[in-house]
Amino acid sequence: MTEKTLAAVATDVMTTELREFDVPEIGADDGLLELEAAGICGSDWRNYQFNSTPRIMGHENVGRVAKIGAIAAKRWKLKEGDRISLEEYVPCGQCNLCRSGDFRLCQETEVFGTGKKGLRYGSSPLTEVPTLWGGYSRFMYLHPNAVIHKVAEGVPAHHLAMSIPMSNGVQWTMYEAGLCMGQTVLIQGPGQQGLAAVLAAKRLGAGQIIVSGLARDTKRLEIAKTFGADAVIDVEKDDLIETVYALTNGQGCDAVLDLAGGPNTLVDGIGCVKKAGTVVFASGGTLNNFPANQMTAKRVTLKAVRGHSYQAVETAIDLISSGNYPVDLMATHQLGLDEVDLGVRSIGGEGVADAIHVSIIPSRDV
Image 1 (cartoon, rainbow, N blue to C red):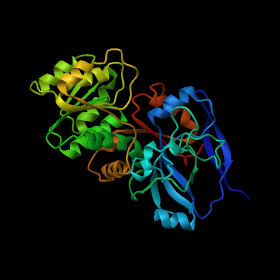
Image 2: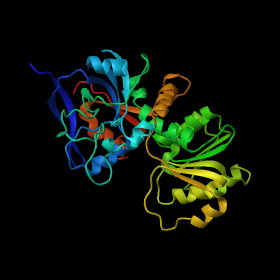
Image 3: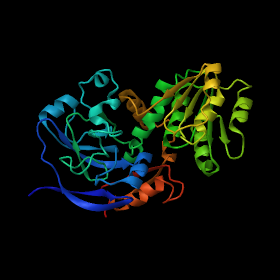
């Protein structure tokens, strides 16, 4: 008799329903993951609002290898029962981007833009065999090109599920912003990635860490201080640029990370960076008031970022597993498969109050 698994399927706009699926047969070159936890990303909220193709969401996944083929076991150096964190990407492994380590931009795992969509965990539709591409399920398919990280026993699964969003903060702070020991950084937006950026900056030995947010972010700004921020700014109460220059003795910041993506946050970030500094931005719409002259006068480096490298995920896992940081403050809620709608809405600010990182625990009774 074919083994079955339960999954929460995004069937339409802002709608999920529980469905039963066959667990796929595993060959020599692939595997099967039994989920312990699947984190809910801000991108899940965006997809949830506009979804038109049935799919199993969830791309921040931690679990145990339930089945694995001989070739896959040798390639990944894994055996059944091993505990892993799974990246969202399913790259080809052969193109120039993959071979240079930038597999997150591989066209075979690209889901944005026009044209044929690539494979990606949490994004690929049910029509893509063998269907189990998302973490809001009790089992997931491990593709031969899956990007896998072995993780330690004893670390709570809902903490490890934060390794993917935290790796973005690590990537953008450590590897993109060029932040060095003793330097000053402004982090705009105390969300999952912004708080991770605080930890990364602290680990780097930043001289001064400043975090900005809105009035509704009061609790998150307090967590940022607990994580090591030297100062926090409520931009609805205080002028961001004036306050930053006051805090830095009129110098501005060596690096600015715009992780808020608001209508004016990038412009404000450019205003806060010192001459020859770097501004990193992860999102944002079209700007009509882009300060090109100010950038030229200050010789600012502006860097667009997206996703994370393999090493950034390893570093995030180490930050979580070390026990040196109170990451439990970010892991605010854990829900069952029958509560996916509530979880995604909570990340979007429409569900449980004060949610920062929410994990789905598929093994919970429904």
